Length: 422
Image (cartoon, rainbow, N blue to C red; front, side):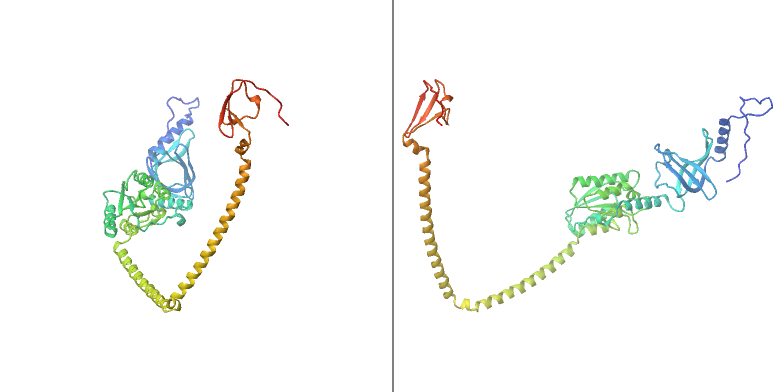
């Protein structure tokens, strides 16, 4: 830094010298003058240092200290400057910070106002990638136990990519060549730039809600780290992890790795490779089927020949040479069983008939109709309710009396109440 010419601080014109001729300053005047000197001397500069005393305020402002082995400098990173920060600031991180020097006048505190910051020795995007990878790995998003199997014969393949990129053309060409007739459900999204990550995550969620796809391919063609950055965003990683449909990540070229690759159920080095992984080759399947068919025919032929030999052995056995003898023995045994069955059936029917007559006689003796036959009757009141107590009737009531033969309908002219016979 070039040396700057020192500026003389003048006393305020509002304050005249005291009786001794001394110039008297207020604290705020000194702080203001020093602030103006610093801001004039250092309007912008880069400072290298290590972060310590890192604090993230609810307002969104970041307060920290930049230090080296000999000194330290209080610093502030206002929210209007830090909202687009790609990586995570933390204590111990070596950084290069760009900003201006000034003084916070109310406390007379000299500090550095940061406007931009980047990690020292590694790019901001690469650091953000490593930080997010470490965070998600700790949470278990890369755990192999969570990865779902990919269907070998999907009927519908969901593809989330740009509708105009080379990736979708490669996927469609390979699917048609390897297994024509496979349905493809395309959800078009931007694959780079501001807002792309949110659109990709939304597409994954809605593809799951729609529920038609058996497997999803999420990706794009190659590009720089900045071009592929949408697939390194946390929102995409969590959408992939939460997906009920298995996901194949196909981002960039074989050497490119993204956070999406780590979280997905299967990583393909390119979109073309993803298409090859998601469906079987029809020609290979047909060849395998022909091989299976030949093996089945060979096995069936051997089994058939073995059964023919067994049948020939049976045909030459004693049982097949003397069939009439066996038939006569079985016929005689059948006649014997039929006679036994007839005797048993007649004995059982006779026994049951006698038991029925006995029970019918007992039932007839207990029947109310038998009692009526001996000269008794039953009177009913209001439908089928039998009369048991004269006190339940009054003069003028209509009753119905059941006799052995016929029914009498009567009207009550007098009721005599007597005690119940004990």
